Image (tube, rainbow, N blue to C red; front, side, top):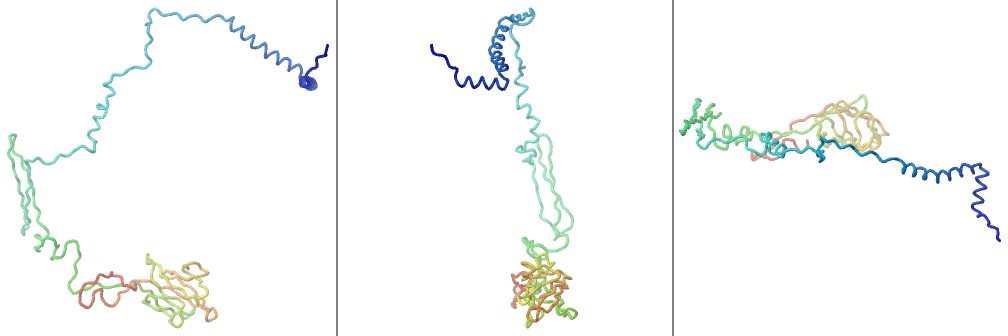
Amino acid sequence: MKRIRTPRLASNLYRDLRDRRMLIPAIALVVALVAVPVLLKKSASSSPPPPAPVADAGAPSAAEPAVVTREVGVTDYRRRLDQLHSKDPFRRHFMGLPKSSKLSTTTPSTSSSTSSTSTADTTAGGTTSLGASATPSPSAATGATSVPGTGSAGSPTGKSTQPSGQEPRLFAFRVSIAIGRPGHLTHRSNVKRLTLLPSPDKPMVAFLGVTSDGERALFSVSEDVSAVRGDGRCFPRRATCRYLALKAGDEAKLSYAPEGDRTYKLKLIDAHLAPVHGTAGNRTGKRSSRPALAPDG
């Protein structure tokens, strides 16, 4: 008879459990896995059934519903929304005048007294009257004659008038500056746009105009100016200043390259509006459509 050999896996498992001293706990765990379900099944079968509930003699046979029913009339939306009729934006709250009432107006007279007219309509319930008073026009109070479509003194309605023969004057921005060598500045007033400073023979900057807020004067800087220092704002940057914006009182120092970077000073005194010689109209006396600001302003 052949000898039964134990599987290699079982022998290795037995040897490992024995060497780690876990053989007894493993056997106890296997026994518990088998015994616990058997004991639980026996205890469940041996427990007595629960007693049946005793029925109350006075209790109704049918169970009452848990939800309390309501009457349909209580939840009617029409009753709940009746109080909001006064706030309905699509409802006419103000009725017009009755058809029996009429308004009558009278043309304004030249006298300063007021006149009133009333129209009465007799109905079955009584007499209803509605009066309208007419107020004299300003022209009647002042004694001036008013023509339909025109204002006082015969001028078109909504347009300002001016004496005949007088044309609007034009204005342009001018600046007052001081420019030159430090300690020897030359003052110049009413400098026009595109004026080369300090002179056409030595152009360092040129006046371009005034910013939209009227606080800064803008100057174009010549390429012969190698550096700009001091006050003011340079565009696009201080190292390559091509446009210089100065406020009243600012002083900028300009290095003029053709003279060996000799320093010149530019000071803005103020920027103002000055009248331009001539009028906005042409020689024929017709009114011009040009704006009040001159083209060079």
